[in-house]
Image 1: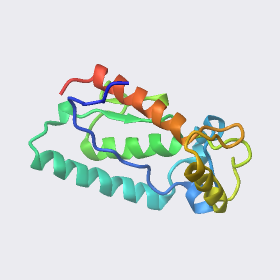
Image 2: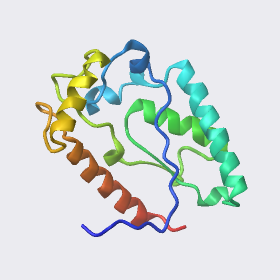
Image 3: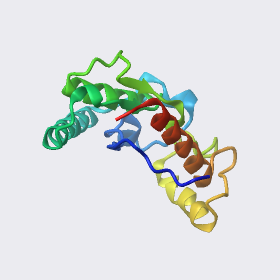
Image 4: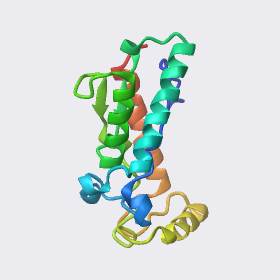
Length: 163
């Protein structure tokens, strides 16, 4: 694959504190990730709002017009909720071409062994990744799989959006 040199600028934002974060749960499957009960916790809404305000400040400082902004997010409810809050802060209509769900931006799927289990199991996953980034947790995605999927998403965004 050729080196990806983008013509656009990207501001990457992780979702705010989610209900699974509060509960100490791993939620990485599409099946569970899209459920409304796994959206942002109240603290996460505040975090998303603050992130939106900081982003708006950066846009103003860099003279970037709001009509040039595109918000891309995964189908997981916690990221959709985060994107919706940021769009609200920016005064962008969420149900418009400026906001787009991209499935390839989704969470890494850790497989059924880890799904809905305690987040205390994350070190097991990181140990696998450290040994071999191409090793998949049983039924899940490897770190290399995620890198490939995200590169595809970036290529798609580069093709779809012009600065």
